[in-house]
Amino acid sequence: MNLKKILEDDLYLALDGQVERKDITINSPKEREMGDYAVPCFNLSKILRKNPNIIAEQIKGKLNNEWYQNIEVINGYLNIFINKIRFTKYIMEKVLKEKEAYGNCDIGKGKIIVIDYSSPNIAKPFGVGHLRSTVIGNALKNICEKNGYKVVGINYLGDFGTQFGKLIYAYKTWGNEEAVRKNPIAELKKLYVQFHEEAALDEKLNDQGRLYFKKLEDGDEECVKLWKWFKEASLLEFQKTYDLLGIKSFDSYDGESFYNDKMGEVLDKLEAKNLLELSEGAYIVRLEDETPALIKRSDGATLYITRDLAAALYRKKHYHFDEALYVVGNEQTLHFNQLKAVLEKMGYDWYEDIHHISFGLILQNGKKMSTRHGKSVELQDLLNEAITLASDYIENRDMTREEKRQASREIGVGAVIFNDLKNYRTNDIEFNLEDILKFEGETGPYIQYTYARINSLLKKQKNMKIDYNSLAINQYLWNIVFRIYNFDEIIIKSKMTYDPSLIAKYLIDLCQDFNRYYANERFITDDEIATGGRLLIAQTVSLVLKEGMRLLGITMPNKM
Ligand code: ARG
Image 1 (cartoon, rainbow, N blue to C red):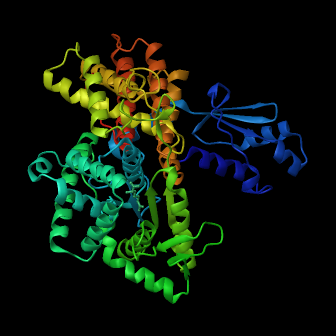
Image 2: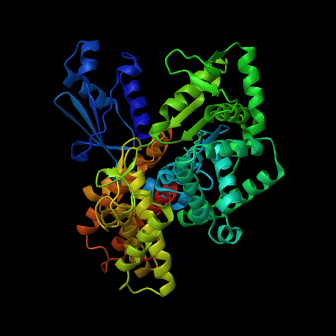
């Protein structure tokens, strides 16, 4: 149901077709003491050449719908008050019946979206840089599904490129099988660093790196075997991080290597369309508004963008997507502009369906986050730190050891995810473990805490009676009801703008609405009916909070 739409229809009818729909304005004031909707009549006054107050009075005389309780005319405005009891009953019954399906919408019915997200690089640590892609991508996946789209989640692993030549050479020269088996990522990283140190002293090592990469590309048995092993070991390590984040699996792990044998087709097509230009021994595609795209290097090696072109063609053909999202940092904006521009030149009109979902950096004290030794921070360490701090906070709670263990994990990880999602994604975000773990303010734990408190309230009362007609609807409660009503609007908007922060902010607002209501009401009294009404409202709020957090990829502890 759409109240605004109902009102618009009624206004249109009341005006007897003397104006067009687009001439009717309906405002939704933030503070609703002056009405739930306000209709300014100044524009209508110009069209109808009548005083706005007179128009407002005339409309008022004709508006007649059980959803309106009261209509006031003030200063050229028509202020509409919704029938609170009737509407509250409608919203609460709907939420309690639909539960987690509340807010589901079908704008995406029959449509397919592929989301390329997370996409860490093999044989390198999973750093905080990939946290944002993982968390934003996962939330967008949930949000698109909530809107009725079919979503394909793709982890486009960085599993190819000259660095593997270097790694294979390093392993064959200095590596130790036992050590790599025990601790793959750390060992491989060590070897990679050693390669670069030695290469700084002896240039010729880089030729070795290229040579081994060429061997790998050509399918040399030993190289392929090592590469596969490195890849599998890395993936197992990454899965530990995904497990911590609560991400089960991706629909596809086709990474860069998957496109190794699919680039010839791209080159052929570019050739056939006369788009390839030879420039200093390399092949480029010239673009109108962007730097030319370098497609093939002078030594014959293909590049990142060439693989992405192959991937885009493959995904279109294979998944028939209506939209393709790439959740990748701001620093790759040029790359995605080039990708789209080349596809456009190739004559694929679906280049417009490709969206680079960019995001900013994670900063610590205003600087790019790094460890004390200046190295990049590993995500697993960071998450574990958050979990440890959360467990300190709930140490003295009346909970079993297992409950505490589970809750610390949900709170610690939830805090990190929420902090990432609460700001508009292209902004850089500041990371301070203590701030993000506070139980009040705009944090994940604040929402979880509100939820857990509602849970404990609900446990106190088993039989909830409700009589909607006797519900005392004050402004606090009315704000909650209207907020809950607006949930689906937020769901649709967050899909349209690819912006999970709208949901994060909405959940903070809903918690604040509820906590204000709670602070101003004696919640549990001897009056069973009044108590039942309040508890059912609390339950409605908790259902929406839980579902909203699920969309962000955050689970809720029952107790904390
Ligand atoms: N592995 C890349 C990186 O870490 C990100 C890949 C993003 N996806 C893509 N289709 N280019 O920079």
